[in-house]
Image (cartoon, rainbow, N blue to C red; front, side, top):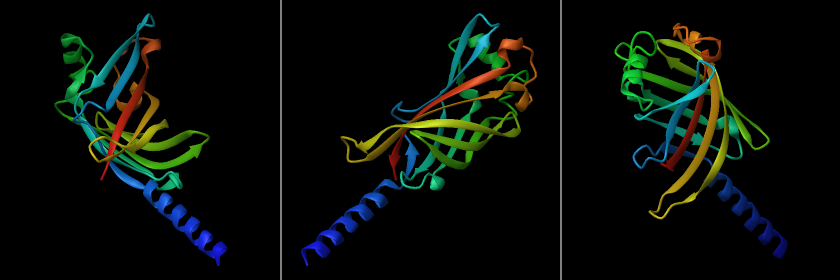
Length: 190
């Protein structure tokens, strides 16, 4: 009798823990706990860093079954900020992001697999009116309760893509053909 009670208790605990891990999250873009950053080489001499100030989205995270994970992010391209007003104006122009014609970029995952501690995310990036696959590598930073009664999970992801793949054909030199993206998000469980 004791063994079956113990077994039932363990099974209930495992089931509860597993179901508590699978959850949907809204990216916390209000508290400055999320960032969509990028960097690109400037003539091969230095790195130019930038960020998008206005974005939002959701993600689903299932620690037990990463194949169920999903990511959906929308970025307002006009919110680009490289800390230089004239450069930002040029980057928003037809030469680069053409933000008046394409005010939003999106990233939608198409699959997630786990490799060691990393999550390999396949997804489609739509930027400058072009949709192409872009892979990200993500790591869980942490998860748990916050002081306000919410549950949170945070991730950092990195990836890269070529400008020309998204019809951005301005020639910045051979060292500046590829953009690195660095995404850090904290989500609030819904």
